[in-house]
Image (cartoon, rainbow, N blue to C red; front, side, top):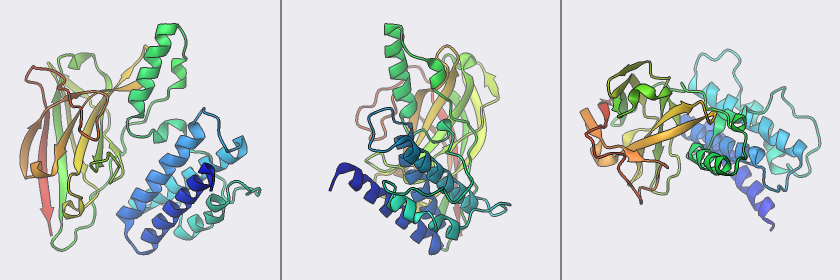
Length: 303
C-alpha cells in the first residue's frame, strides 16, 4: 500500500472513531477526534511540499476540515442556531474514504477553514525559526504567516458521579519585559508523554492589564476531561504568546507546564521555560534565573 493510501486510511479511521464517539454520546472524545483530524487535513492543505493531492482535492480536504470544526462547535455549544448535525457529517465519509477518485461537488456550501485557525501545536515556533533564517538571507514574506485568533475558551463539562473536573485560573505571568509584549495571550493544552493532544487546545483572550513585570490574565480555563480519565504522565501546558509586528506573526515567548501530581486545590506558582515548547519534557531550559513565574489557582469540582 502506498504512503498516500495509508494516510487516507488513517484519516478515514480517525473520522469513523470520531463519529462513533459522537453517536455514543461521548462528546469530549468526539471533539478531540474531530479537532485532531481537522488539524491533520489542514496541515496537508497548507503544505508547500510536493503533494499526492491535486489543488481541487486539497480544497475538498479544506472544506472537510471546516465541517469537522462546525460539528465540533455544535457539540460545544448547546445553543447553536445553525447546528451541523452528525447525520450531515456522516454524508462526508465517502469523500474522505475515496478522496483520490471523488469528483462530485462538495455537498455543503462551506469554505476551507482559514489558515490561521488550525496551526498545529508548536507550529508558531517553526514559523519563527524559518522567518529568522529567511531574514538572514534577505528572503521571506512576513505577511504569509497568519496569526491565530485568541479567545477559544470552552465551557465546563457536565459533572459525572465520582469524577473530578478542574478549573485553572490563570492569574498572572512574570516577565522582565512584560510591558513590551503586544497582544499577549496563553494557549492551554493537555498532552500525553509523547506530546499528543488529549483535549481540544484553548486560547485565552488577549490580556488587558500590564503592571511592572506582570501581565494579568485573571481568566478561568476549564480542563476538558475528567481528571481521573487523564493518562499517567499527562501534563497541562501553558504557552505564552505575543505578536511581533516586525515579523508579522504571533510568536511563543515561553512556556510552563503542570504535571498530574501538582493538581490540588489552591494557588500554585510554576516555572517558565525557554521556547520551543518541549511537549515531551526532555530538554527543558529555564527562561530566567530571576524569580519570575506563572501564577495559577486551581479549583477541583467533584459531583
